[in-house]
Image (cartoon, rainbow, N blue to C red):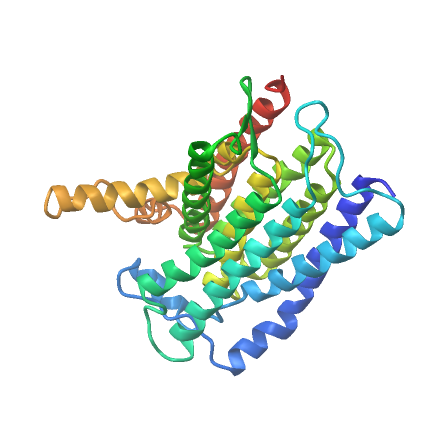
Length: 348
């Protein structure tokens, strides 16, 4: 079986399972009264979404996991290999990268599930405290970083420059740990911030998934393509229920899972720095929040944006949620295209 067929199988299964689970999980969430509580700090018209079933991210978490397992089994049983050379770019890649990515995503999803459960079931609007949430994410991040280190996945490729091996000495080893913790923690939370309006996080992440599928062809890495294909099918299946007006929200359960998946895939291509253009919208969402908070404190009450993160600013400017999703996804697709150009032509 070719890797292309395995990727298609993975995407189709993830789409089908995720979409079908909507008929089961959404009524179940309604029965449990797992409805979203809309805080007063958001746009006033979001109040109409009060009670919409939350934690719908469970749908694509199940769909992506099942699809990946089936895709891998089909490919392996047909005689395919999950790993190969880096096409003269890098060698020694380990399929541990792919399973570490799924582990990171699931770990982050568990932290998000705990947060959502406390918010909804225990009626604590803020969910986990900031310290508890940070601690949970750091534990998962440290586990991911340790997995990379122990499996010797410490070589990064820099387009037009070459490779950097962080195992050379103690100093580079410390740099690897610090950078990986920073990139992972920051990246996961950037994706989380993007989940603020119907369909936004799912549609932006779909462009990211397509990028990693194409990257798997450039790098001849079937495992990467199968997991990215499952991601694409999962978020598209979820969009059937999450597109405005949303029938369910993914909650932190889903957005943190997607954050872990995106960051992990960035490490799977051995070039996490390319996550900057690949996730340019995630970066803009985070920077808008940082700028808003910083400027507010420095000026004692003034704001740069009408509301942050930046998708709310455009809402306040009169943009409809569907328009924001289309424009933001298109912008992110341009960033993804730039990343692929750098990856393809930057090989030395």
